[in-house]
Image (cartoon, rainbow, N blue to C red):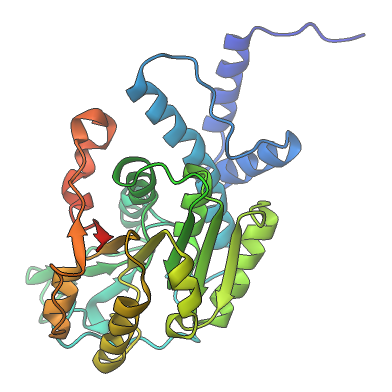
Length: 325
């Protein structure tokens, strides 16, 4: 005897109740199961409203569901702090990150853990917020939280707010690491090619696993190279993203050489997205390249068109976009 179909609203309510009965980890695993079982695609945005802001929020929610599923999968494959033993960190000697003393710095990946996740971890005593400066309980300082990936909100901001439509374009992420930018570009854009260049072999293997598992290999490719070894990829790219890819991994002299390589290889008309700004990086590295003759800053977006992102405006101020002259 077949069961009587239930009303859509009843189905939604049942789904909400089911999700609330699961913990955060099982929620993500269940969403992965749904996507696989029903073969949902990243372009599954359902448009049931004529309001642009509503539609933008809907796309953000649905795409972030996929990104959350990827993040949940990555959490099972790497250490809690997302740092591999094969990585060689170099604490910057100058600039705003020169205070990142390893003894008081916690690495927490923004792609894997958002602000709410971190607050929950602190509330459950799995993370600390402060450290004692002299072993007396009241003389404390906040710990430094450091991320080497772009947050999921940041990915939405770059691809749906900051940049123009990227249909048939090529996106290059320099120092792709976990692959966060690549996955964000896949779900938020129609770019023809999305390329990650990463010098750490373990991270390349991880990215390839995720790309294959979530069937993103039709547009995403990973190169296990140093960026200066592939100038032809730089020249072919329409959008290049550099999320502080060099500061904690390479000496000052090597960083300067890479920026000179980029200055030579990037063709005019390319869009360059950086965090922090190129001006800040060049000031820290004392690079004598005239930025004004090389890059033209993009006009900052109007956040009033994206009200659900207004709370993040200060955070997104660190992300800059330029057109190469």
